[in-house]
Image (cartoon, rainbow, N blue to C red; front, side, top):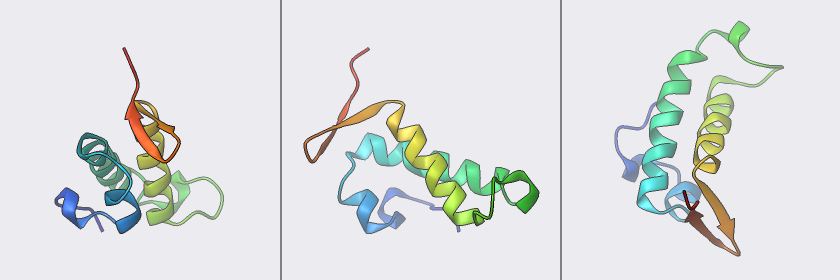
Length: 76
């Protein structure tokens, strides 16, 4: 179930990530949703949705880190 817009994202994503990070999350999730539709392309017993969420969080962590309870963009 890909996300059409950021407001469709799960509460834990919308409530914690800044809008740019939400955009990264949404795009990565949607891409992984398509890429890992075949169970043979996933690791272990992970479902399609679980895999897509893992990929999305990983994409966010490439550009953001957490300081206390706040996600902040890494400095270039």
